[in-house]
Image (cartoon, rainbow, N blue to C red):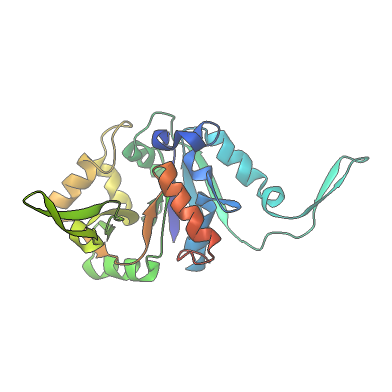
Length: 253
């Protein structure tokens, strides 16, 4: 299936990393997080990518235009000024890089891609990782036949929980994920008709468009209890980096 990746946000809460590169290009290990995402989708056979560019989109264009050099061994002849890729990439991906506007909202980016979209497609954001089973996501969508399916996840626990009685802490524990409810995990199956719910380029898909789709009974939830981690802050980035360095990344393929 076609995979749309929204990769145009400013990443202001990760400004330590995003002064010179857009957030999807922040590295986890040796690869930008967007490459981790694409490898994950490709492991399920989805290799037709459309990347919606915005903030510093030229950095993403340069990377994919020269991905063989960035991710392979190269041999350079200084006298002839030629470069040879010693070990070609194994990935057989098709990647479209589409400028969707520096100031567009997530809904506006989808609207800008309207002529590029297949009737049905997968969509995610370029700044989060998960081990959601994409086959199960697709099966959930097809079972219910609505125009949109969102992966519902539990938010990561960030704060401990205190039980206090008369000024004394009687119990201290980490907040369990299941106590936090369900949130938008960012892994979608969408029908192209969702563009009919987006009115202008500044609109955020997660606000009025998706709220209207839900109110009309056309939004299905695919509940995922496994790993999910966004990269909104430097702390999030460091958490993902630690998981990667331990060699236990649930998303690794």
